[in-house]
Every structure is written in structure tokens, then in C-alpha cells.
Image 1 (tube, rainbow, N blue to C red):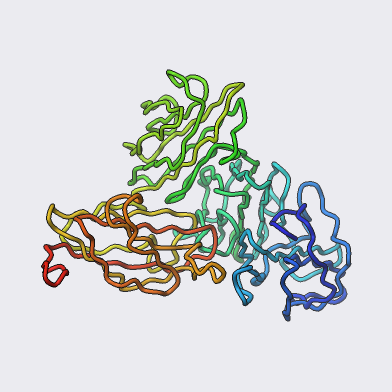
Image 2: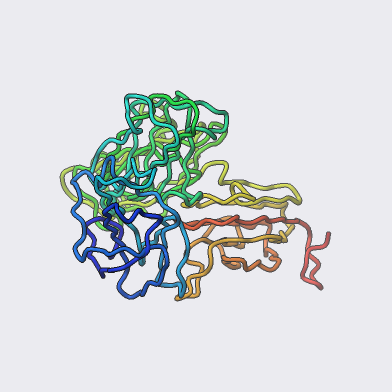
Length: 469
């Protein structure tokens, strides 16, 4: 199929693959999907496949006789000459994914819950809910809504075994495909419901696991497709008007609540802005509030073609509202936000910093900034002892996916000293003035360990052209 949706164009049919320990007496249908420009050689499956795609239920597939989670599903990329072994990894270019549809015959243990859900709204619950869930359960739900939309989750009931690090019974929520830890939004257990979540694109995953001791009633969660708005909780992210960069709809009414960790503030930066212009901004406008609701301090209404100023909250919440009237539109807007965990201003003469969660895997979908500022007359020397990011795009040769970029100044409008990715360690860099800006940008899949950096400020020797310590 071209794309990641159940109504995508089928590119090819496969007639024999080797399965994951399927019992031969259990009738099974397997649906592999691939871009037709790729061949596929693999040893996972060897089961006859029907030439017609299996019929799917309107609410998604298979409740009680379906299991989506499996050992790694393979991913192909147009820019890669090899097959990457990721657990349901995906990129918008070329994808393979797998639907396992098993009829009522006995199958391997574990094929009892989970599924791919494609309806615009629905509910997910633990096995046997509202009764106690069974021991040794492993369930995986993949929610896929229309492209250009996001997935919004709201928990109605939550009651799992408690553990300080949620190592026994738990659910995990992913901003995209599961098993890529860069997409992980959180792991939850006990009896405190997780907060509302909104994905940053049209895919979200939920994993449920129970061990062999102690069971509770489990959970019930509703999801819906959001064309705009939602609750955003990542270290950083992007928001944009519906349909951006195409003209937004009339009578739009969108609200985003950005919520970061308690010790952090929210910074919002507009990259593009074009709305209907009028005095007072009463027709089409973006309104900002320093808190989670419109009752908090109003930071301003903005319209026209002038980008709003950068906004920094006084708490860990920011409310962004977008409204349009019944006529005259515009291109809309695009903005990104980041939290204090993803933003630092470094003013000491020397110091070190690293990517979020280092030495563990950094999150996907982040845009983090480190600004280094020294006294007037000083310059900054920057080193990268370690760098491990996603590799370059082998077609373009560019760092199109995850990258570290260094600017000779305090903004991305200043000259760029370089952009790096993969395992290529940058050379030592020296600023022309007293400021440097380091930006880490990651896309929505394949995260790595990140980087460590060290800097030193000092006066420059004109003869040698280097910082004197």
C-alpha cells in the first residue's frame, strides 16, 4: 500500500511468507503491504496468502481474535538500500506493515486482544473489562486516523497493579508507532488515570501488559480524531492551522493546551503567520493565554501577516486558541513550542550539555535549543565529544531526519556553521562573536542516543585565530 491507512492503494500481493510460530491447523490470513518498487526476501512467513485483502470491520479489526503486536516488522525506505529491522517502524516514504487476521480456531497464546483501529472515534479497554483482566496479557492497539488529523485520548477508568516504576502491570502510550522508545509518551500503572494525550500526527499506539500475579479491573479509554487542537505534552512540538499551508477553513475553532513538566516553562515561537487582517483582531485571530484555560492571563490576540513575538509562560501551561469567521481566510500559521527541558541559556565561561535523556534514546519530534552567551569581546569554542543521530538521507546526502545544527549567533537567522547527523562528529567550532546557538531537531521515528557537547569562552588571539584559555 502507498501510505499508512487501511484505504491506501494496494501496490502488490504476496503469496507466500513464513509465519511467527503459527499452528498449521489454525486458518490464518496475512496481509503484507509494501511499496511496489521494492522486492522482499524474508524468513518470517511461509503461509499461503489470499490474493484479495481481508475484509475489515468498520471499527478496525478483530476484537478477541486479533493480535497486532509481533516481533519486529520490517520497514523499507526509498533512501535505504537495505531493510531496517524495526518494530513497526514507519516513514511516509515507503512502508510495509502487517495485519494478522486469525479466525475462531485456536491460535498461539496471546492472540486475544489488540488491533488496528481506523474509525474516527472509538473505545479501547483491557481484556474482560470491567471484570479483572487476565494474567500474562500482552495487547497492542494501533490507532490510525485520516492524514492531517491527530489522535486524542481520554481515559474513563484506570485500575492496574501499582509499582513504583510500573514494572508489573502497565500501559504504555506512544506518539506514533509502538516499540520506538523515541515515541514513548509515558508508562502508567496504579489507580491514577493518565492525563489526556494528543498525538502530533495521525498515528498513536497503546501497549498493555500484565504479569502473572495480581489483577485488577483494568482500563477503558476513548479516542477520537481531532482536526485541530488537543492537549500536547511532549518536550517540544509543532502546531499549525487546519490544512496549513493551504488556506484554513471558515468558522474554525481550535484550542491547544500545551502542558510540560511542573518545573518547566513553555516557549512558543511562530515560524509563519498569515491571517485575515483587521483592527482589533476580532475576525480571524490567534489568542494566547498564560495558563491552561481562557480565565488565565491573556497574552494577546494576533492577526494579519506580522508574526507574533516569542512567548514564554510563567507556568508549565500555555493555551493557544485559533478562530476564523465566515469569510476571508489566509495561509494560516505554523509554530513550535519547547519546554525548559529542551531549552537552555548557558552563560558560564565553560560548561557541558547533552541531548534530552542522554545516554538513553532521545525523544522523537523535538526541536531543542541551547544558547551560549559570553561577555562582550569573548568568543565561544564548541566541541562534540559524542554524537549518534539518525543517518543521512542516502538519496539527498543531507541530514533530513534528525540533526544537530550550530548557528553563529543567537538565532536561526544567523549564519549556519554546520549541520550534522549519524555518527559524524563535528569539528571544534569557534564563533565570530560572543554567541552560539545549538539546535537539535528530530523527526517522528528512529531515535538514537544523541550527543554530548562542551564549550569554552575566552578572548581570541588575532595571530592564531583561536581562543586563549
